[in-house]
View 1 (cartoon, protein in one colour):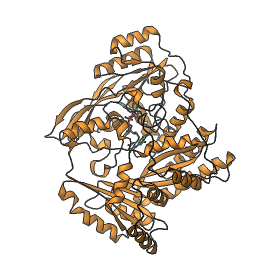
View 2: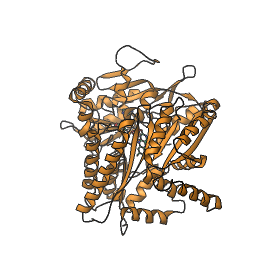
View 3: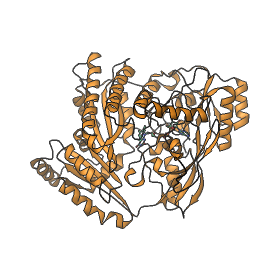
View 4: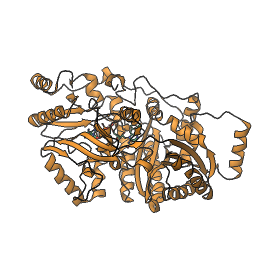
Length: 559
Ligand SMILES: Cc1cc2nc3c(=O)[nH]c(=O)nc-3n(C[C@H](O)[C@H](O)[C@H](O)COP(=O)(O)OP(=O)(O)OC[C@H]3O[C@@H](n4cnc5c(N)ncnc54)[C@H](O)[C@@H]3O)c2cc1C
């Protein structure tokens, strides 16, 4: 199912799938040009695969032969495509490297183990030959988590592609847990569970192209995390193979036997070892699901309503509040285009009279569970939104967003083809600090994008930022920014680095987290000490030294 050749090597998703503009392509480019104040969009094609040059594989024929003998024919790959496909993840910076053929280090070989025993053999081989070993799930990391790197003493790089380890190992319908091999992709996992009447309930936007092991390793979050929790909350037990031996936690509902070691594996991003199995909580398939939307007069009013919902006795499964820029973007380019009707025109007038169109903020909420968790709760939550000043938009608002959710990431490739850079970043903080952080990060992104354009000879152009809040807790929430800017030919990485650095500085200055769900990888590593403290980082370093004394696992990432 996940044959690598069927996936884009330098973009998002299936090789034969592209963003579908649903008839509004011209207006989309006009909108973007106006927002960026950009006179002309240029053609910015990516290099063809054959134009990307690679260093020769550093493994000798004897070493490759040994690997093949150990883990099996067809499980060791060194082709041009495989080495490039696995060289990077899917951050904007990664795509710049892939599209421009600027790869530097790439894996020397890619291993496709089909069992824990073959993972163990790969680890032994890496240790014996002093090679870096990079666990690779779907490769959808946006923080440089799978990028090729090696330590100074390492002779080469092996990437361990986990996608063939995709079996259900155990299903306990009494305890509501399931154990899987870690390389299983989102749709494979859900198909298995749903055929038996269950679901994990973890659907990140990258769901189709990411794996269970990657979700655990990066502490990911799905859109319904309010109901099901983040990946670390869903994780019941885990089995990891480290260079120092096997590390396994017991399958227990809870324990007071010292600190919880699962939480060291969740977020370890491949630095401690290879997750080969994970046992997760499962849930009966929800009998009822409902999305609805409310419009608020401004973002601050929406934040207040959102907080009340998150702190209520019945928080919805999904909550998402867009700021003005994102609300206007969503209304303009939603996938269910407005059919001009008298009803729609009248609604627009009412919204305008009542002050909802100047700084609109769209709140989407999704409920799911058994019928008693949805239908009696809906009026309670709606009442709360109405009392907070929300204007009810009905079910269509939510459906339009959820139906296009997995399509949206394809748009980034179309934008890059036209010389537009686009990236996202996310953080989390408490409710009391959320609006100041939102204002500071929006300003930081805007200023750094604009300053970069001015320094690059485009003083009239400007960047575009839009934001939403999702993943809400009683104590606070996650902020998610999307930003776009014209690329300066030949300076793209420096242009982006200035924006990213300024944003990370702003995050740590506000004592927010460097990441709510993308992880640290290489991208956030320089700032981690400011979040964890020197002693905290030393503790993690000591664990690393214990489980991976030679530093073979995923070098150059968060430690
Ligand atoms: C368009 C897009 C949308 C996204 N949306 C979301 C979202 O909604 N929510 C979210 O949480 N994230 C999101 N992400 C980020 C990314 O999908 C997540 O971090 C995801 O959890 C990575 O899973 P993966 O299988 O692709 O892991 P990879 O990218 O392959 O790896 C991620 C990290 O985990 C390590 N790793 C992978 N497998 C293993 C293993 N078996 N053992 C040990 N270490 C391992 C890798 O070494 C790396 O450090 C998005 C990314 C993109 C590009």
